[in-house]
Image (tube, rainbow, N blue to C red):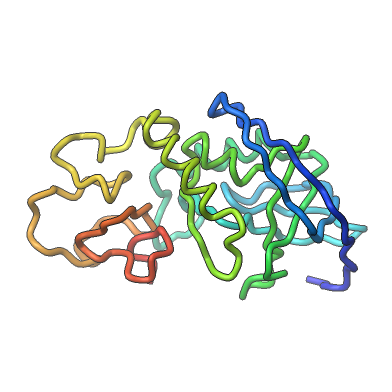
Length: 219
């Protein structure tokens, strides 16, 4: 990956209409560094490849996580194909505005960005539709509180994964919405859980998410 792009500084106010939530959210980005790119490939639910000034870059959406669909050791995770398909619908072949938070790249040299298509933030729409879980990774937490609120609405309205989640059963611990951990179960470890990288909410009685990044058993 060639990392030689110069960022454009500007001020922008973006109105995000969350069609999935049937509500309007106003995103004041303030002083931001942003670029305009073309989405040439959707990798999965939270990553894309873009053409930016003639260079190809992999972009990882900030502040969210979606289930895995490619890692052989984990198989296809619950709602992974649906999240990937929704990302295709939102961005494939489209012009996107990409905005930085604090970090430019992650440890895999992927660009870290909030991505907007038609002035709607894709990161937020995926959470709103129940295709992604809000996951804050400091220092890139500009919209973390808003993402958490959007997720609460998605859960309460049972959108996307939340509509078919095993944890909707009363016998399952609601801290683990995509797997069923019995509420009265004995202490458990990740070795006893048939899935990795599952959404984990507070209070997380089994401590599957000690780093509080929103994902259980990701170590």
